[in-house]
Length: 331
Ligand code: DX5
Ligand code: ZN
Image 1 (tube, rainbow, N blue to C red):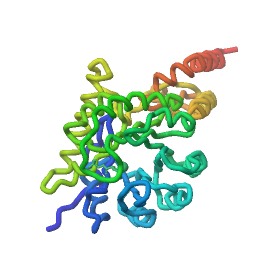
Image 2 (image 1 turned 180 degrees about the horizontal axis):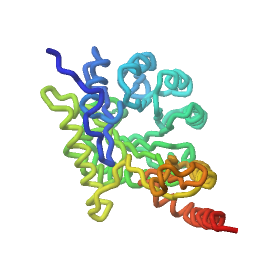
Image 3 (image 1 turned 90 degrees about the vertical axis):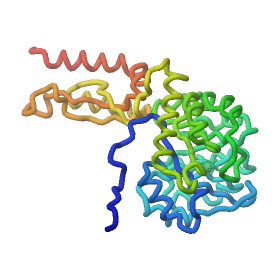
Image 4 (image 1 turned 90 degrees about the horizontal axis):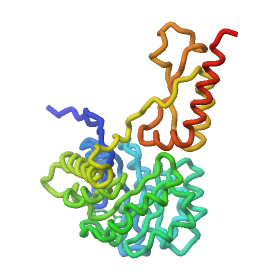
């Protein structure tokens, strides 16, 4: 009898680090199987390496292949375009269903219009630097970036050795380029990531580890490799950057305020305007049968953005709480 395969691993990952599976070294004759397998084995994303034979000395696949793969998995698609003219084809990659598109800063065509097109489509926009390109090359585009991708091998081929010096010089610094994003900015490390190099990458604060060849070795348990890489990256983060404290799992939400609905909606709008997503729920502190207009509503936001929200909206929260208190006092 055929084994039933769950669409998602039973237990959701509670880690901070995320693994994007690069399918470059999968069986290119059966990419549909590669993406469904990566999903089943617990990868968080699919990383799609597009090469044009000009920008890099290798050729892979393009938007039609990505579009065909899109309906085979629910995992997000990160496209990594190692091509000389992304501007010319950007609409095709967006139409193919890429959730993020990262282009290279070393190309000889205008970069800003392409980043703007990606953002206008509601997708995350990224810039990637080759090992010898300084991060300062990204500065003119800083405000347009959701993703900074740092290459720790020369782009073009899977299976190369991780350049630890490049990682140390750039990964922490890449975070500063995204300082304007209160939530959702991502540093990706791409090239040579495996169980030997994941801990160092985590200790340098990366959000997304792109993993290619390490996942596709014959006879290897892909799910275990993914779990090990995530866990090692989280250990690296804990002891390298976080004073020994375990990192906040990426999906954990915290209650930031409890307010009557109109005030809760006001604060929600202001916080979301600054780029932090907010959910509103009926507060369990008030009786279940209490009227929706009088009861308090909880504003929930990602724990990873709590400190930024407190800095920016702490005083506003107190002021709204005071005005809620005043309006509930008898006249
Ligand atoms: C290289 C690609 C990488 C590569 C990663 O040009 O951008 O995504 O496939 O593969 P490994 O993990 O084998 O270095
Ligand atoms: Zn890549």
